[in-house]
Length: 446
Image (cartoon, rainbow, N blue to C red; front, side, top):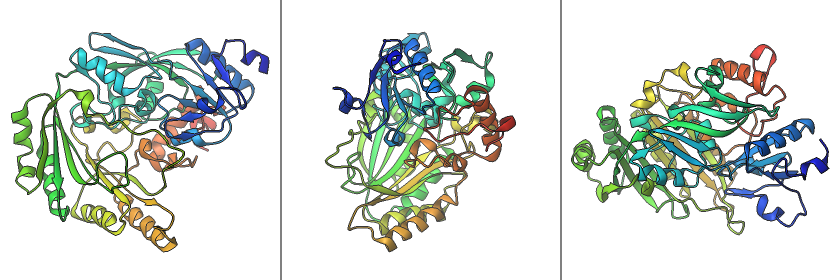
């Protein structure tokens, strides 16, 4: 396929460096990329043509939906923008979403029909990236991960073949799509089974002083709480544009029963927190609006990470709070798991650590003049001690573009199984601009 073939309309809109639309085309939600070319695909046939071209020209492919991934900033390769594939179709409780759809519009359409799908926390996040990476959201204890609600998909392989993927037709491939990332093809349509949802109870509590005793109460509360309840703890500095400064606990109850939600949260309310918000909201209204990348104020580096904790013991709580105390420009975050998340057997999806009860994250912002070499090393060491207590890593919250990072996300057994699927559907590793699963001989990682 020649360069002339790239411009004949069979692969969508092709944009190269120097073209009038280049500057806008190479921008994505979280940064500015410098690929060899950008193809904006408006149809499945566009995707097929683009992938045949990429395979023939030996170009790596980066798939862009919502555009939040740090992989959009890796130079070279072909960026395949599928954001125009954003159809939302609802048939009873079966929901079919285009691979480029965003969770905010999806949540609004579903709310109008009294339905919901457990998505992430942010309206502008893409359905594709979140789901393929697992998808921890506000309904994780009620309904599980986003990928747990995935019942089928339409996928275009590296060769340009279109597959209808279900548990009956391609069980191993659908298993891999439930948490294995964008390693196996371009998902142009996701099929979900939605849940009845007439609204949520949303509560926010403020914390002053030492957070340790409050977090112990929160941990003990969630050990016995109804699965309708999911909570987060977050402590952020004033510089973070994603949330108000300070320490808060946010709770979402799946449903509109305010009395049940208040009863479940009673131990927390009695622990001395201040109630800032409490009431019924539409589910779309609890999703955040993350600001887009501003080249005048680029985000600083991040020294830290995330981990999936089997137990949130006193030591883990102390280490997380201490990390935040010792690094003034830092963030600490916890999200409750368990419930429906833990109902899924480890072997039934590629997502790691189904026995985890909490997701934890902490990081110091690497701001010039604030973190010297000693402070950076101290933050790295403090985070390493927290991560060592965990049993896995959530890939969707990893800003690293290290192509070996997948080995920290998945167990050797899961890696071997994913590698076998990769070998079958992408033996040339065209889809490598992600937390990459490398195809190996006989399905073993290389």
